[in-house]
Length: 563
Image (cartoon, rainbow, N blue to C red; front, side, top):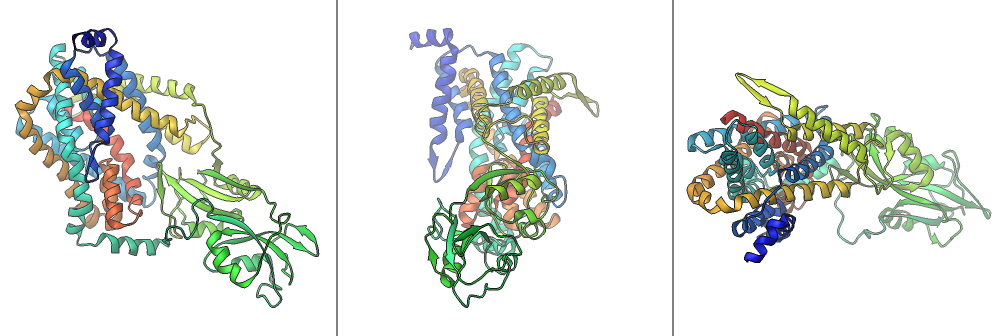
């Protein structure tokens, strides 16, 4: 042990990576589907290693990792943050602002009543509201105070203690509230309400295996028999006359010759037609009326599948049905999926397209390119990050955070380098939604920045907190636990009432929105599991951006208010 201790003092990076590895193991442990997660696990991993060994941790290294994480968060939520301010999104924006405000005020009052020091108060907020980035903003705010360095280090260590303790109920309590208590208070059956909402949005459920996941869209050839209803109709009339799905005639073989039809082309008996459509529609609808044929030459059609980043006002704010009816360039393409804030969105005729959505489309290559020209931009896979934009944006964010102060009554609150970097990421993410080729960073790189940045940061916080963790826990353990219960539940309860009876939000979407406002994906998953439906993600995506931005900033605010 002594040998290992000397090794950690000489090479502290070894201890950091050990803490992260142990932390991810702790975070992966689950009880009845609930776990602490990688971030809190990394914090506890750092505490565990720090309890046995003295590890010198570099404040510069901590800051570099934390700033990378904050930029990644801002970059990810930028498009949805500004988008939510427009149209019907204002109700979700209001809920996303209301709940962090209630959480901040509740944490402030509880800290005052329990006479907690600044460190315990910061950890109470970050753990109870399950927003670990607030550890960093609270730590930065404490370091900016006029007090001895030893006292600052002690208070920062207390943040880690309180966060680790309060995060447990913060996670379990939110899951329980959103999936069990919330529906009871709203007097709804989650499954029935979800089915009703899916019906209103035009979302159709398909049984697993009806359409192979690997081939949901197909091109098949059929011979038009004598007496068929489409004989004498134009291609446009026949395509619009199909009920239950979109089908497109891409090529026709007539008298041995193959040609690409135009909308005015008239079908004749004996035509062989290559149709593009959803597999189940081709099989269950066309295949019943016309014999399928094997014609490799006719079916030799280049089909493209691309992701299209939506920026065009022609699509934004419209339902999928309206887009299909009003945008001529949708002919020849089929929608495979929609991703919003890295979450898959249920597809229905009433699903609204929003700026920053990624539409996964399939069709002939010319058709997909025509649609992309009016919808946004094709997201070609990239391997390299725009490190010029990344470096300059973080530099600008740190600079602004260091020099800007905000007057609040008699207080002058320093914006802080962490909040400045978060806002820089927010701005770059929004600009990317307007000009998709600007500042492009692969999603995998952003995920690494968010995961490794925060896990490494809290692991180093834990390493410093290790020596005082147990003594601090004995000092205020049960008091913090009870205070954390109040801070977790108060914004959820008030948010439920405010969202349902003031904002008039759909109850199923509201439960997803509560999980989003407290940035807890596990809460959303619990609602989806109980509802046997993915539809609650529409509410989650409306509030999660505000939760990330505002709760992270609350780490700075609670220290400013209490100091």
